[in-house]
Structure formats: C-alpha cells, structure tokens
Image (cartoon, rainbow, N blue to C red; front, side, top):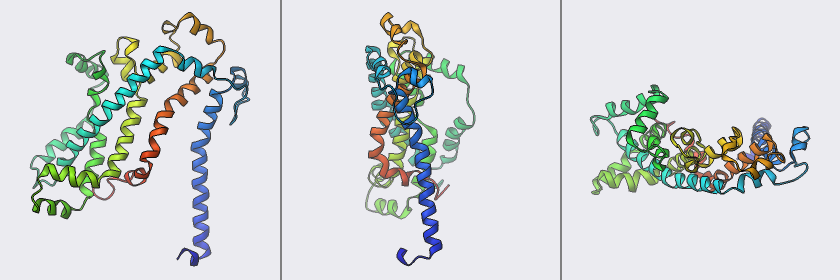
Length: 294
C-alpha cells in the first residue's frame, strides 16, 4: 500500500508532483501574461510594467478586434471550417486507417497502399505544384479550398492505424463468427474501442483547422473569404491598412502592436480552451496511442 511506502518512494512522488507543478506553471504563466497585456494600456505595455496583472485596464484591443463586421464574418468562416472539416477528416482517417491496420493475409495490397500515404510525408511537391493542383480543380477562392486539400491527414492515419493494430484480434474475430461483416466490425467494435485515440485526433484536427492561416492567404482572393486566423494575420500582424476604415486607423493610436497581438492570441485560444475540457479525459490515454504495436 502507498501508506507503507518507504521514505524514498514518498520523496520520489513528492519530487514528481513538484516538477509537474513547475511544468504546469511554465505553461500557464505565459498565457496569464498575454491576457494581462491584452487588457493593459499601450503605455504600460510599452514601458514594461505589465507582468501577470493588467496595468491601465482597458478593452480597446478587444474592441478593435471584435468590433468589425469583417471579424464576425471571418469568425463564422472558421466555425464552418471546423464544423465541416473535422468530421470529414475523422471519417476519411477512420476509413483509411482501418484496412491498413490489417495483416497482409486479410488485405493483400496493404503494403503498396500504406507506402502510397507514407511517401506524402517523406516527399513534398512544393508550394507551387500544391497551388497549381488546387487551382486546376477550380476551388480556389471558395470555402472548399480550406477543406479538401487537407481532407486526409496522413499523420493521423498512421497514429490511428497503429491504435487499431493494438486492439486484440480476438474481439473482432468473435464478431465475425457471430455474423458481423467488416463494416459492422469497424463501426461497432473498432471505433468504440478506439474512443480515446479518436477523441485525441479530433482535438488535433480542431486545433489545426482553427489555427490555420496560411491557406486562407494563399487560396483566397477576396478578404471576405478569409478564415479568422488569416484575417487577424492580415489586419493585426501585417497591419494591412487597405482593410481598415478611417475610424479603424484612428484606433491604432490607442493600442499597440503588443496589446493587439495579445488580444489576437486570447481570441484564438478561447474556442479551443472551451472544447478541450470535454476531450481531456481521453487525451491522456490517446496521447500514447500506437506505442503497443508498430
């Protein structure tokens, strides 16, 4: 029992808790600092007086970021991107990973198909061929340009197929003996047993879609089609004045680059922070997926 543990064991456990607390603080304090900067005056931030508590509390940075109709439109594009892209990513990931997790005797062409996907990780055609391929499909400057090019996340496929391989073969064999087909085995056996892995990959997909800004800048010709991160990148980071009205330009005198960028970070963090608690219980188990079998 733990109560009967030696002093060496108790010391080891105490040191572990201490080190984990330090790691937690190292992750949390920068976020608190960014939040304090976003709520402080530009003068206080410029003079370096803001640490973990706002100085000269104000919401001007948030007023600038949230007060524009363009922001609401970009926010809606990002929400729609997550709502459509994440289910599509997970559906295709499951449908690809399941057959690739089978042995050669069950799926004769498993090897060539697996290498077909692995090669896309090892070699890339480059930015120009990537753009030309998307352009030739006719989806440039449409919503689907944000979804279809990354519809099959290959790294997620590899992680999930390794998790599928770690499941006991006897469970699926019992289902097959009871009359279940491969399709039923996938959705009634493999997927429910892989809930931790699927929840973790779902979180990865949410973060990827929500934080992605590069595709919007490259594949969208009109700013009104930008997702949230592309819009914030253009207006706040690059400070593209062509997207600002005269009233918006006047507001720049009341905020600074640091406060506006801090507000951008907090706005971008909130949706993921709201989703994470619902998936957190699966994350610890899913993060080690694929470690049982290669």
